[in-house]
Image 1 (cartoon, helix red, strand yellow):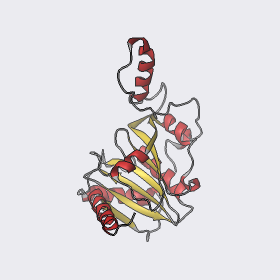
Image 2 (cartoon, one colour):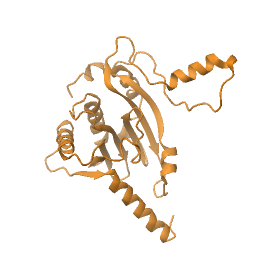
Image 3 (tube, one colour):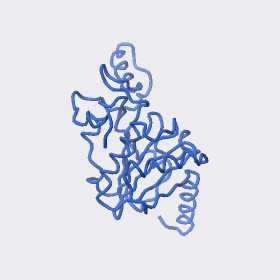
Amino acid sequence: MNNKFDALKDDDSGDHDQDNCSPKDGEKEKNDKEEKDSNTTKRKAVVPGAGEHPLQYNYSFWYSRRTPGRPASTQSYEQNIKQIGSFASVEQFWRFYSHMIRPGDLTGHSDFHLFKEGVKPMWEDDANKSGGKWIIRLRKGLASRCWENLILAMLGEQFMVGEEICGAVVSVRFQEDIISIWNKTASDQATTARIRDTLRRVLNLPPNTIMEYKTHTDSIKAWEDFHGLVNASGGR
């Protein structure tokens, strides 16, 4: 893939703080001020380092894994997604990505999420709730390459739809893998069509590839209907 990221693929200079911190409970005493300032700095929005190539938006990597067949509430899902860290430049992205397991090497029921900073990879998030996602189901063995091509296209602003892109997800399952790209406005058909066409191009998909667009409203309804049936039947 020929874009500005390729030239920096092997740049692994320096470490990048991973923003796994949760806010401290209560106020620190004044004699702990230095420690508090250090923790606060970690939670602030990341910025490009000196001489680095800034991205148009800041992004965060997330990871989730759950046991298949175990019903998940919205609350338990939110607790299960873990933020890996945030980045603001091409170089910071590669410092994360070069150390991450590739999707094709994940096991079980696992997901990587890459979303704009401040947007949670959840249907109900304010940035996502009126939107939807393009879904592509992949045979096993293709997830790593497709995921890399997708996120490089997203970070490189190849979709050309302004602020519409929210993030992308790769879902590793037992029989197949799934990639999706989320946008803000499901009702904007011109934008969703442009995202579809760009997705087809950057992933070099065969013409007969099935691509499904699903609104988050429909996803929520399907989830609620399914869990309502499970609860009504006494299943777990």
